Image (cartoon, rainbow, N blue to C red; front, side):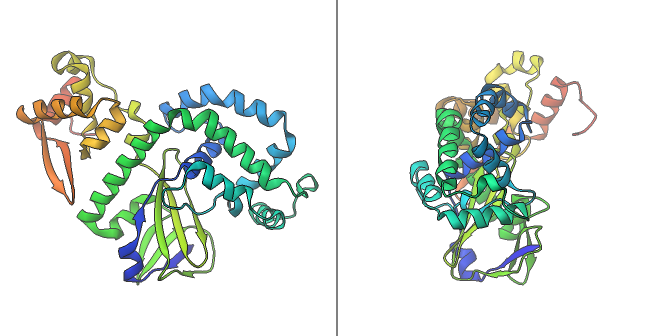
Length: 328
């Protein structure tokens, strides 16, 4: 397994940030995989996969570059420069384009764990990679970036609250379950690769959410290290919670949708992100649900989180025909 040695000052100074380039690369992985991980992604792939495949069919060299760059178990490093604070997509992709050709080829050999195909022994690989990432951003991510950004911001709120409740160790264990975890003795496991430990004390440590179900680690030695992780499933897939018709008839579809989402604590900003409703509308729904005793609220650090009460749980289970069965 790969792990980083972290001192207390580095951990205290670590932070979450958003990266349009990381989101775009994660979406490139989703397009390459071609199979959805949740219903919301199924609709997105239906809309964008044909165009993506047609683009690669017309450009076999770039198609081979993508397959090589995503590798068998390791991503070519030049494709995923470590995110920087407030960096735009254009600024990020310019760093991909600026990679040295010899370095890009070396990274591809690492991701392939073998020799480079003859067709990729060329100097325009960084430019081709940047062009494809720009296509993915322009055609599939930027039109929906405002919603994606709200979802990612909501995840950061939830993770920050988790840190305030259970400390960094609990937060690490849920970033990429099975891959990231706190090992004790100031050691953070970042992946399952047999890779030499890295001493990163004094460096900038970043945590970067993306909406697709993927993740990776990246670094710019010796100054910047990042863990990219998939945001919480309920945020990435707001369609994953069905509102029972009977509950919608009782409370109104929008208000019932808020109640159904609250099987785990969420902030107002998270609810705005996943429902698409305005802040005022979500606030009114929460006030009614609070007054009815169906939800409760509590403070976690700087955030106020809402969750269903026992009464709210009974109401949701009754609407789904599971009253008396307990939570599944």
